[in-house]
Length: 283
Image (cartoon, rainbow, N blue to C red; front, side, top):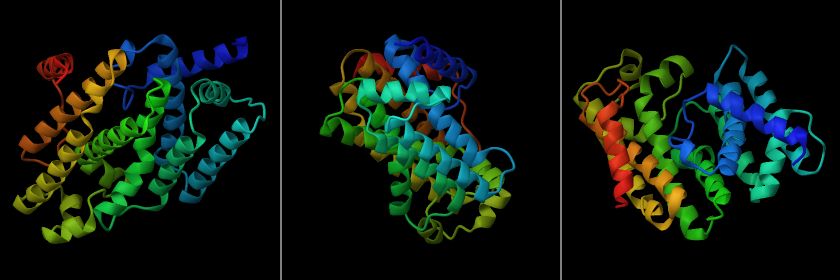
């Protein structure tokens, strides 16, 4: 590995350590070469996410910057020498672990959608978004562990989609007030007579609670469907997946128990102990 590539990896690791949100729950248990690759992928996703969500840029400017990321990625995989530390490191990760470029392009596509689409008519539309916003992350992780067979990829999709939904459910207020987005299907809202005013006023009345309980059950079923992946994968990979699954179930449990659906649940020390216990049980 050239000194330039090593420096690019170090820069990605340094920046990754400055952020904690969405960074893999137990990345410290991963082998060092995979941990470095995870940091690179994380910074790539973080950069695109910040373009889509942060600052005061117009939607047109955000889409233009995301298109620029697509172009830079394509140029990198096509052999053009990159100057940006991120693409220098990313090029090495893609080649070393045989990461399909489409997975990274799917991530950018999802962030573009965040800029242009604020509402979802039905669950199918939402799952199509999850397929590009969340599922590529799990698939990339499986490639890093050289475990990307068809069965594992399918199980990973269920886990990642469930985690994405859980993230939506715990950020209802933030998504609406800061980003003007609602990730609850409109047809479900109509079924329970929920309007956008519930989100504007943070109303947790009985219909709103019933609506969200239905969403929680949906995410729980997806997580359960994919949870076998934590048993199929051995060693550190399996332990990492079981930790993430257990943490997802714990957040879901707290969401289901709270009365205020707009309140973000917080895990405490005893919750983390439970998560670790569940992961160690390998069940």
